Image 1 (cartoon, helix red, strand yellow):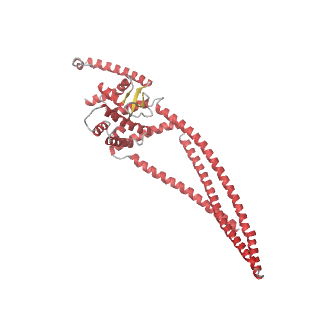
Image 2: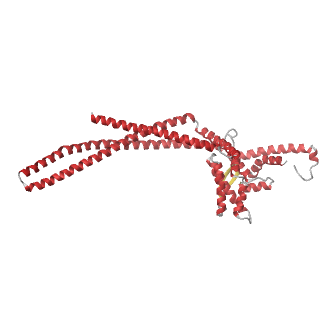
Image 3: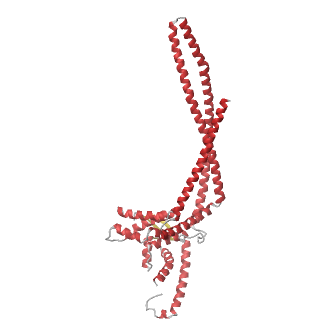
Length: 119
Length: 307
């Protein structure tokens, strides 16, 4: 069960990162905190390799900024191709979630779901 | 400002990380280390903890996993050639690098041409000057053997005559003159020997430099021809090399994690050994050729003198 949950969240991390970066640019720790608030507990060993891959693919762009903190900080922002990719992934996720919700609703597991909990 | 112990911990982590990424592209190694350092600073400045700073840094670094595991995660995420999109930044970098290499190649060729023409002009001047000096030294030797020797002989005759005629007054001045002439003769001979030896060394050096330059040109042309034959598309080759490098490094890192040794490190040693041996062999051949030429030239000159 735990493995399935891990795999499920792993599959959604990339979309979650792109959606968060679509709001405004963020640095690594900020992104980890935002993901944690959204319910994705991701470690540094996962997020930075993912960000590097997205940067190499051109979905996001990175730049080093030396601000008030005194030390350089790497900020990530969504690029135009990244925005297109995020939009497509969001559509696919919505379709997938609708299909899965429908499937759950038609079974006894959907009827037994505690009240107030969304799929 | 971090404490010394914290800096040591971060540096040790980054050192192991860079070692694990040693076969990866250079920009990956640099960026990975900077990211770790920056993240540690961000976490430390964002939290308030009663723990000692070094303990906090250890905990933060532990979140990355071990440096080797983090390196593996970084390289596993790198896209393969097949998955790269047409407008990828890596290919753009490869094109930019190939343009830079071409431009630098033109610059090197221009510098090389200018340097070669200057060196050639200087060598030609030196060779002509050495021939002029050799001729002048020959005239000096002839003067020493001819007029100066005749002058000494004349002085000796005069001194003997004055002794026979018992003319004391002029003998001292004649002896003084003979002494001066002897000094000039001796000094001239010494100068002749030293200058002739120096000229011989100069001419041999010019011949050796000419042979070495010719050899370097031939080897360089051969090397360029080989490279042009095997790597016609520089930009595509750069991209392929980088992806191949990443794939090989990834495989090596996996083997290192599982088996505890690095096959690539062993291969690198063997490659280094082969390179050293082949370079030593090539250098030995060039030196042997040079030595053979010098010996042959020396024999030719001696046979000409004897003949």
